[in-house]
Image (cartoon, rainbow over all chains, first blue to last red; front, side, top):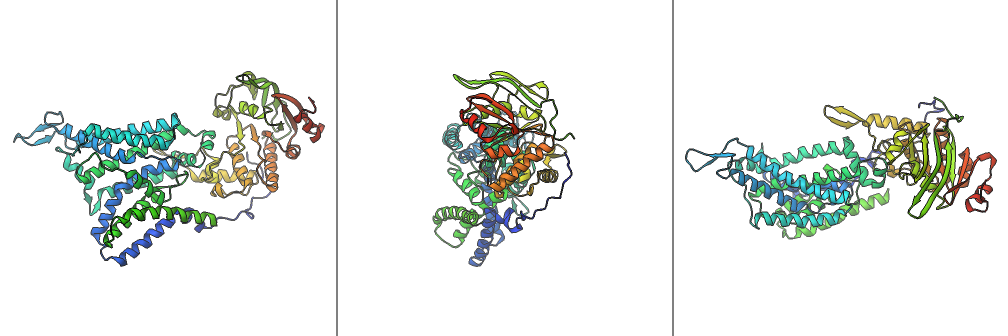
Length: 356
Length: 254
């Protein structure tokens, strides 16, 4: 198809967009990141305790507790959808995991035998019970995500209504299976479970390590695979995506499954930190998760978002919470402030796009 | 490659195409053909059946009657992808672009180039950008592959949508109202893009309401009215007045 060019194309009429007007510098994520860094500097001067190792560990741990779910919901938000069932999903997955763990660890189950003293239960294969119970929790999340995706992509129901229903369904199921009582991870593998969920490696909290790994994977998936490209295309122009032959139904189902899995994993980690999976665990966490994603620059209209933004949003929420505590401000102010920040973050972005 | 000067073998041939939607007869007994390197204007008022005809050729609908031959072979399309597979590309009226992606990403949407790293296939950004730049060059459009479509002019967007059709060496490109929503200067650009396609031996069907555009680029004009073909004339044997009369029904057929 090469045909001789009469003259090489020059870009005399189309100037290159300046580096500071594209990419991260021109994104809400960039502004919020700058605001976060400033806030941290202010915090440092306001309280000598802020940059201590203990406090930093606390902050890292606390924001990791919603950040993994935020990564998951970011996929959904980029396609222009929403998932309100993440809070319930966290609880249900955690509950299934700890119930399966307890069940498999009961004397008489094929996975354990009694120690010589006749009292202690010993695992036949150390770690196997843990793996099975975590997989059971994740499988539950997978099924819920699949149902969400099926209703939205195949049946064409609105994401808001579908996942609002699922919020209630899943929370209800959590109460049903537990009979309203909490469930406690137990048995011979419980210590591994606690080590993996609330332990740390060289002072770095384990959830934070998972978060960093998952965020890195997510960055590659979003920007360097065709799946990621299709996720963005779906949020940018769903009709175009369909006309260009993108498997829209499949991509949609996949994002809801990813979101549910992330929420499930998050729930399992939280239950390790709490030491139990109460039936009212993570109630209304979906709002924190969505707020964090939106503050970090994910656009609810679709087409924008990423792992960095999700993390920045979560860190900002946590730093504010932490800062208010250190500054001895009444902690009830936190919610009000979070709301103000959501609106401010979106407002700044709106003003910027008006100006350019 | 063979350029322009239409060869005798039509690339697209329709015989007796008809389409009913329930009790409504949208198309009736349409015969037409398009040769390689030929630009055919398809005109008609709203409801004349042009978009139904385009959708049948593009694989969105199946015809109730008649036969489609493409490159000499009878074809049956169930989905738009089937039509694309044989070499029919459509530039939709709203261009079907994702605003939040770059020009290169839009050109390759759904057909991304990938590099394999063991079991993982990652996007080959470099190859896509350089191929997109090549295509924009062929179309004489000053469009940067890495720019977001959101920031582009109407003419650049049109170039991106047209470049997409050049990926697969399409034999027939159908353009639905490509000049309806853009400025005068950009109309010029689009018309010259159509000339580029013609030079490269691609058959083009231009669906348009704008008489000057049709007379500027088309070799032949087909007029539809009430689901039937009313005229099929070389452009130099007709006039805008005659075509207008045919569209409105002041003149029954020519």
